[in-house]
Length: 339
Image 1 (cartoon, rainbow, N blue to C red):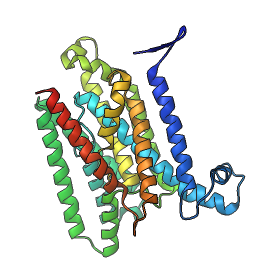
Image 2 (image 1 turned 180 degrees about the vertical axis):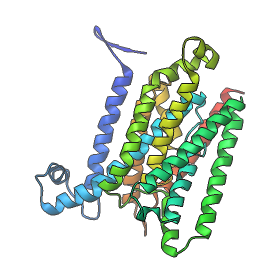
Image 3 (image 1 turned 90 degrees about the vertical axis):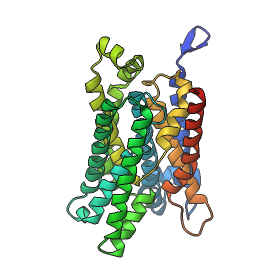
Image 4 (image 1 turned 45 degrees about the vertical axis):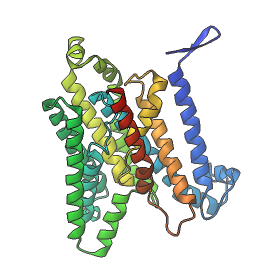
């Protein structure tokens, strides 16, 4: 689908991506300006480029910018993963949170906290979260090869999520001390507060590799809309595509959980919104989904910060309050369309 402007054709996907990038930059500017010590946009930008006061630079570069980037990257990773899973399974209800991938990544992170592995290595938490996400995604793909019903696959994901949740509850019940219990609870609720550039340093490599893998197979996802048999007949290696999507979504989801905890539903909402703008092409939906999901999580974090509550609400709680009704609405519309 291309819009014609004069004699030149403008790709609507390029326009959409450009708009979303501008929105993301605007939200970042708002995020670094807001806080207990409000900074005007000029002061915040000056501090960001190194021309402001020392105190402003510390606030912006060590507190607000890492938090904004953590929210943006977490949303982008989840949006990209959701769009890729939906393309692979050819179902708009697929999403890391719904399929239990996020819960399994959280279980991996919780195990790292429970056994105190952070004292061994700073890579332990992101590594454990990625391992949990990869294991869950691989299990789902194996199940997808045995069952033809997408509803059954979603139910398997729900069961996987419940099992991971039960194991996390068991770990909390057996927590060796109140501090470990508090860390695990906070991680499960999801938040990007108190994130530093070091946290980004440990999570970003996993996200980057996962994103590159998913972008490399974006055109194959569009070919897959023909069906697996027809796609294989056209030369597509479906098995290779399946495992690459497992690797990419596992890395992205695990890294996002290690950075911000469990943030649900953004991976289903963002692709659903942008899909009509890219003519429902699974390959073209990846980038705008990532950008929009990043904007959604960052906007939600800004709302969390400015709400006049006694204690700051957790980002995962707010995301679930908004995303769960959206998921029900999308599922009900899909049911009506297929009735």
